[in-house]
Image (cartoon, rainbow, N blue to C red; front, top):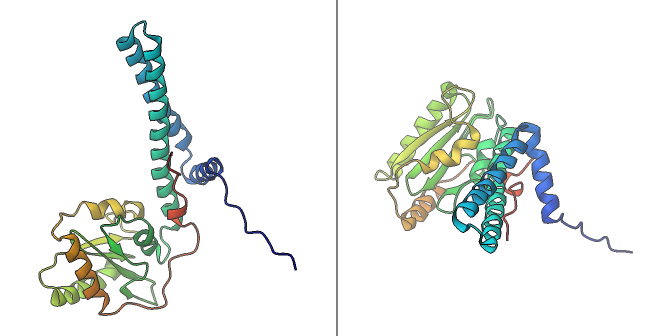
Length: 233
């Protein structure tokens, strides 16, 4: 029986094209942003080359090459960020969307789980937990009117277990003053740092040992970790 060959992964250029096409569906202006991001460093390099290099053609060429490389790098950075935002917008409002962000969108200094620590089977509202240098951050998923009691209960549990660890709150949901899903990583970084890296690990172990909600998964669909633009080598 002949063996089936594993599907070959697309090349770097094809991956970037797929990311661009996916992003354009929810962000039609992305192409113009990328063009502008590329042209601005190139134009600045041309002006600097004429101003500083004079008749030195080698200097002019080097300035322009540097401008092109800077333009490509800036365009890739913008594409990556807009693509991540587009991916999160596609799962926003679904149960488990916050879990997808915590699993794929946090920096290494944070510890988050795709599974909630509190969950309502009836309304699909949930509360998630992230542990980092600022302490513990509880993130609700759903309307504030329904999730605030859940947040208060979990906050009381954490304060009773770890009275010296700061506890913060974020709301992700349909309310006008809630944090947008794609802004969750940035919102976490704005909290002041209070713990060391070693303390973060110990706090997470202590909280994890208490227990977690079973049988809850992130929503199916696009994994934001896999749609980020490839970094230039």
